[in-house]
Image 1 (cartoon, one colour):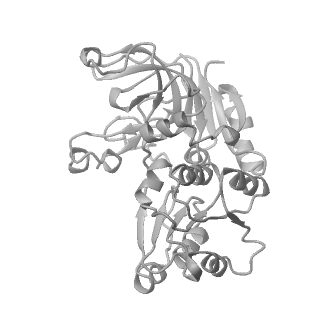
Image 2 (cartoon, helix red, strand yellow):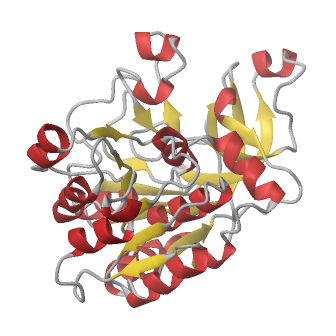
Length: 352
């Protein structure tokens, strides 16, 4: 079968001789239809620190480079394992599913508490082995295959970050960065109808426009503001600053600005992924402001699907490009790097 394989930074290859995976008893076999290109994919394309499997096998998948890419994907179930078939509420052949890319051990303290996103051996399908959505077939744990209602297309498949932020009615919120993650956060804030201001900080003109369209009440350009932190504080909480700041940019200056802007006893939520350790202004965050910082990488798939089905989330406008698997480098990664003003979310049609 075909698969887009990662051999290292800048070295992606569509290979046609990959073995088709066997569906184990607890798994379902999926034929991917669409797969999104995420910021973490782009980081992996540029750096050898995002997929750290060149020499040491992942503890759960046992894989090293090359690995198959693709962790944001949906498709059709074409086979189910024996255990899944016996479950009366299980996924069935023919179901359309959105696939959660979690790889977990199911036995560590975090997994036993249901926090699989904090697994001691956490991994992600499409980044650390276990196959990937940029392939003709993939087998995943059945618990991570979420049925899609007929009203939701394959193409729509950061709710968890907003839920964990515990935004209260009337709270003002700051979102740092309006890339695909930031725009999704804005939509989720609006979908949860908390009613406060959403202040967004973003450089790109096109992404600023998308942020307003998604529901931002104020969009600030750090190149145009003398003091973004002071402006955010003046706009929010009666001059005290936002109750919650969500960092979606993955830039050191951005998360430090979020720490300084949030109000006393506020909350800073990191949604971005980082390649390197980042110096954070702990004096501003903890010592002076007594704010709280938390980091997130998981999503509540069922809640997102419900919000999409009800129409509270409408993210079609974020999809700016649809490409084929053999165009991922030129029209996917290169476009995301060089055409940021016009490229927001890129989807790969895996079946073409």
